Image (cartoon, rainbow, N blue to C red):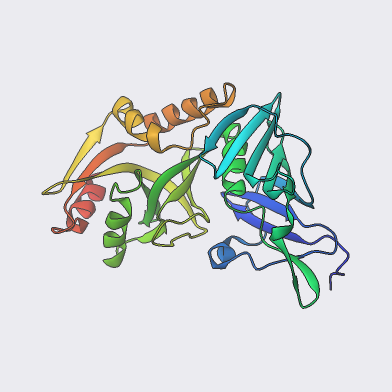
Length: 304
C-alpha cells in the first residue's frame, strides 16, 4: 500500500504513448473522470513516454515571455529559446489562479505549476484534480508527436472490417451525425467523435482513439490501420468522389492540429501530412441524413 507521503502516479496511455503524471508528495490524485477510464494504465505497446510532474505552487516568472499562440483568454503558449510555457487561467497573477505547464522543445518532460484551487481536502487528505489532463495533455502531445510522425486531427473515426475510416471536419461539418448514423446500423464501431491521433507506422498509418470526445462523448482506447479518409459534406443524395493529394491537403490543413507558430516543427508536420495523403486514399463523402448512407458505404468499401 502506498504511503500518503510518497509521490502518487497516474499513467494515461494515448496512441501508444505513456503519459505519466506524478503528484506532489502527500497529495492524493482525484478520480480523473469516466472518459479517461479506458486510457488509464500502462500500454504494452508503448514505445514512448512523457513525464509530467505536478507542483503545488506558483510558476517561475515567465509571464514576460512573448505569446506565440493563444485561444482567447482560455490558454496561451509562450516561448523563450527551446522552452515553452502553456498557461491556463492567470497563473502569473498575485495570487495565482490557474496553471502553467513548462517543457523543452522535445516535450518529453513537463512541469505543471498549480494554484491552490486544484487541491482540496477529502477525508483529511489533500487531493488534487487531474491537472495534467485536458487541455495540457492535448497540447503537449501535439508538440511531442511533431517530431515522431504523429498528428492530432479534428475528426471522427470508425473501425469497420478491422480498419479505420477517418472523417475530418470542423465543428458543424456533420462528421458526428454521419458516424452516429453508421454506428447505429451496427455496421462499424465508433472510435472517436472529435479528436483522432494518426501515427506513421511500418507499412502505413494507424488511427487511435483519444480521451478528448465531442458532444457524443465517444472516446475509445482502440487502434486500427487507417484505410481511407472521407470528408463529409451535406447533399441531396450520396456521392463519394475521389480527391487527389492536393485537394485532400486543402481540406485537411484546417482540421489538423498544426503548430503554425513553430518554425522547426511545422515543416515536419506538413511533410507527414503530405506523405499520408499520398499513401491513404481520400474522398469527399456527400450524403443526406434523410436518405441514409450505409448501402453506399458498403459498396464503396467493396470497391476500395
